[in-house]
Image 1 (cartoon, rainbow, N blue to C red):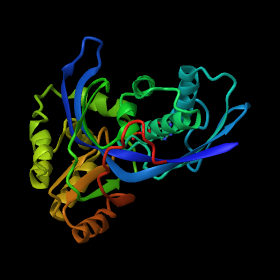
Image 2: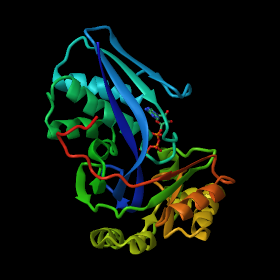
Image 3: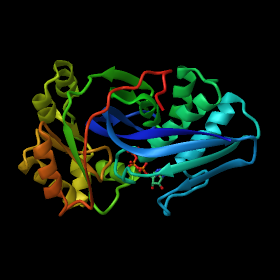
Length: 295
Ligand code: ATP
C-alpha cells in the first residue's frame, strides 16, 4: 500500500457576472477565481484491489459516490483504464461546506492530481482537465488554482494575475446556501445588466490592490443577501473595519474582505465573529505548474 498526501485549496470569486441565459437554460457566467491558502487535507492510499472507500472528519458529508472526491476517483480509473482498483481516500475538511468556496470541487481536483501521480501520470494535463470538467464547472480551476478568468461552463480558463500579496478575511455564517438556491433567488429578480470584469482584470494586470477591492462584484450577492440579511451585514462589517473591498463569494454563504495589513485583517476577523461562526485570515495562492506536483 502506498499513500499520497495533498492539499486541496479553497477559492474565492473576485468577480462573478451573469450575462443572460444560454440556449441550454444554463446561466452565462463569467468569473474571476482566486485560490487561497485555506486547505482541506486529502490523502489517497492505493491497494491492489478492494474497491473505493472514503473517510471524512465531517460526519454529515456522504462517504459514497455522492461525495465528489469519490466520484473523481471513479472518473480517474475510467479515464486511465484501471480495472478493479483498490483505494482509500481520507479527507480532513477545513474549508466550510456550502460556502461558495468550492470545497467539494477542490477535494475532487486533489484526488485527480494525487491519483495521476500515484499511477505514473497516465492522464495528460488536457485529459485531466476534461475529466475534471465532467465532475463540475469549478473543478478544472481547482486543478491548478492561482488567479483565473473563467467563462462558458468552466471550460474556458485564462490565467491572470497574480493577485498582489494581501490578507483575505473570510467569514462563513452559521447557515449554508446551495448553488441551486442562489440561482433560484437570482432568477426571481428582474434581469439586471452586470458591470464587466474589466475593472478587476485591469486591476490585477496593474497589481493595484485598491482598484481590485473597489471593482469586485458578485451578481448573486444582492438576491442571496435579500433572503439572508446576515450576509449584507457581514460585508458591511468588513468594510467598516477597513477592507479595500468586501463581497460574498460564489453562491454564498461566505463573505470575504481584502486587507493590506495583517494587523487590520486580524482585527476585522475578530469583529466578524459576532456574525460568522467560522472566520479565517488567509492569503492568495499562486498557480501550481501543470504537470509538476509538489504534493
Ligand atoms: P461551490 O463553491 O463549488 O458552488 P460550495 O463551496 O458552495 O461549492 P460545497 O462545500 O462543495 O459547496 O458543498 C456543496 C454540497 O456538496 C454539500 O452539501 C455536500 O453534501 C456535497 N459534497 C459532496 N462532496 C463533498 C466534499 N468532498 N466536500 C464538501 N461537500 C461535498
